[in-house]
Length: 130
Image (cartoon, rainbow, N blue to C red; front, side, top):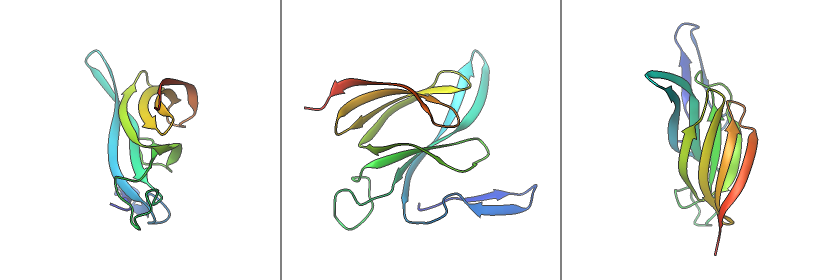
């Protein structure tokens, strides 16, 4: 998947999510905060390949990933983190924050994000790379 077409039937509008198709969308995860029996949809986290980081001439799951956030209405994507090797976990902690655990060449990181703007509130290196 290289892009999403966002269609608003009520407003009778449509648009491309990313302005260009020079990337590969690997996965989209819905962010849901659960408190007791209540669930609230917060938005989406997207795992996107933007560059041929392994030099094989194509975009694939072997390339480094970039993480994007968007709200529940698929507003403009916000780039959160790039050069990710693997997203290990994402867990909304409240209506306005989520925790991410991911790997880069530097090691395994834990990050608390502000939602939906993607600002990094705190970060720690859990295990450095060997």
